[in-house]
Length: 247
Ligand SMILES: C[S@@+](CC[C@H](N)C(=O)[O-])C[C@H]1O[C@@H](n2cnc3c(N)ncnc32)[C@H](O)[C@@H]1O
Image 1: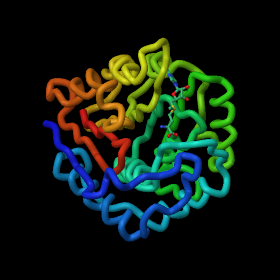
Image 2: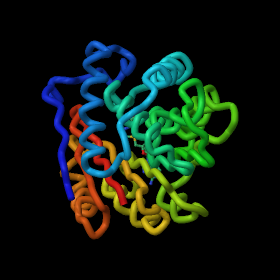
Image 3: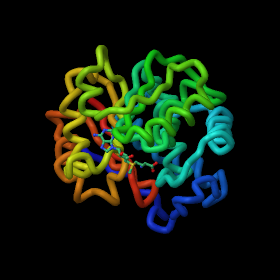
Image 4: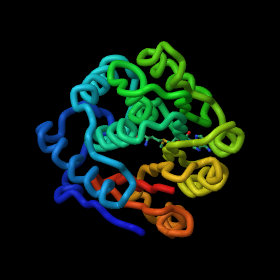
């Protein structure tokens, strides 16, 4: 079953990718949009509830702002809150994020379980980045938030990492691009490489469901087919979008 959530102002809500910490709207507006978005995910049967700790979310955000080196990112404050809240609600023991660049998207997921915003304990939080220099920067960023090592970056091809991961993957985040000319089509390669490891109720997040919808055509058709995923919602909170699917 496929649903869509569309914020009224999604196409006017824009950020400068080199100034990711600049507020784009009053905090109350951001919270209200994400409350609506989470309610749709609950209606779709993807989330059990919509409650999350807003103070911890802000503690996480502040730590990223103070400690991370981010050359650019397309993760808007709304998207950061949405991804963090989904992780805080789903509480994945094992989370893998594919294509993490400098680590900002990874920590938007993992920050629900490590660092000053932690609200549960995870077993494995793995960010995968195919470019070794980017992976090294991401690992350096992550270490400044999580000294424990539960959250870590692996420099490798995400298709290989998810295929070789021993254990269930409770939440998979997809953001990889450009590998071998497959572009964002690699999302489907990654999902297919670990589909059997995603348990019933496992959640898959795919960034760029709006601005890369054409490149993600086959991926989106796949997750929106009830044979593959029980429900899938296109979360149009900004111009990038996030497809949220549950197995
Ligand atoms: C465009 S970036 C994602 C940036 C993110 N949306 C943000 O706003 O911060 C995509 C990353 O995926 C990485 N990548 C591409 N193919 C990959 C693969 N097969 N496995 C792991 N990483 C991959 C690229 O090197 C790149 O750093």
